[in-house]
Amino acid sequence: MNDPHVQQAAFTPMKAYRPFHSRFDPCRPIGLKFYSTPPQLYMGFQPPNLQQFPPKVALRKGTLWPALYDPYENPYEGKRGE
Image 1 (cartoon, helix red, strand yellow):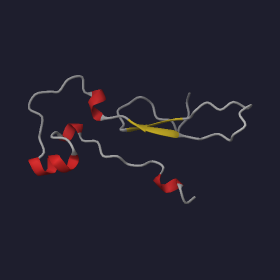
Image 2 (cartoon, rainbow, N blue to C red):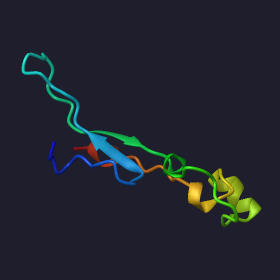
Image 3 (cartoon, one colour):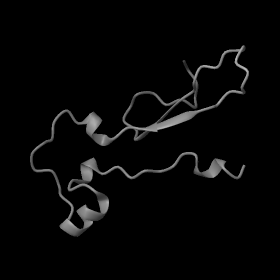
Image 4 (cartoon, helix red, strand yellow):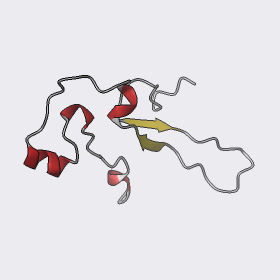
């Protein structure tokens, strides 16, 4: 599948795929579907001496280590008004 809109399995926090749509389906095609992959999937083990957030920042971000921080960006946000 060489669709330029579909990302391959490289390290990207947001991936996309196009669901199968048969010509016999009564509904119109959905288009691209997005999903998030967290950074710990690409880290085989936790390396020693990782950089750490200060305690107050770690509480806001939800993790102690910047390498495991994954902010969520909604890929559908701009499509609602269109």
